[in-house]
Length: 109
Image (cartoon, rainbow, N blue to C red):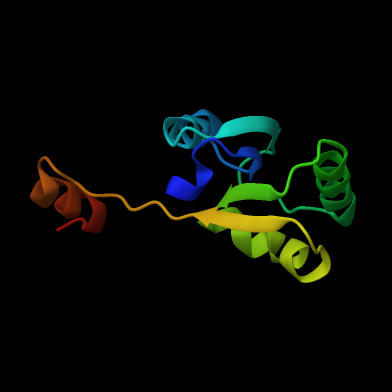
């Protein structure tokens, strides 16, 4: 994660709450120069990918950061575009209060 500190990057996401993703990236001291936010569970079209890549190249950005969920949909970028790294931010959830109650509600136990 230290790699992102001070780096100029593009972020791409299709989340219900993209602000939380952006906040995490900003807390890592990255410089977000471009941001593409799509609706939750968005299926990226080829046109979207071309626009993202053209924008990154025009801004001379070498790194795109996305979520694990979106990385699967954006994998084609890694395969087709050279010179731009696709980095995936892996986020883990840890329940720190009332984990038993949470699990009971989740699994109707």
